[in-house]
Image 1 (spheres, rainbow, N blue to C red):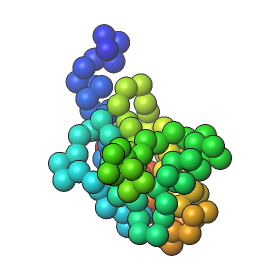
Image 2: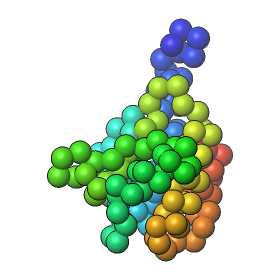
Image 3: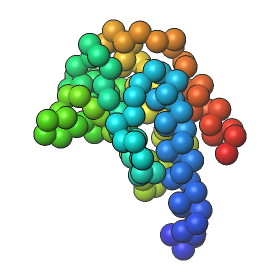
Image 4: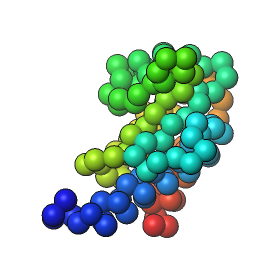
Length: 125
């Protein structure tokens, strides 16, 4: 914190969150939180996709850990964290893996759409 400064840390978290949310929107997905925190992006799993399989596929095949929903939301939403020591490429990798996992699970979208939206968001900040 001393090296980066608190204000820069907060700015970095905001940039990561904005890029993740732009990617989620570009993929046609719905955010779970109406007023999201810059610590995490929570997203509803699209209709027809098994959220538990999504979490497992991301972790086991693509090496990216995302969190699932808890309790009654288990299998219905997922969370992408961007708090702590994370940088732009952590979000880029997470979105790329998410796109690949969604394709494999049968979700229809234009490949690269989320990734491009995240990259554009980073270039604008």
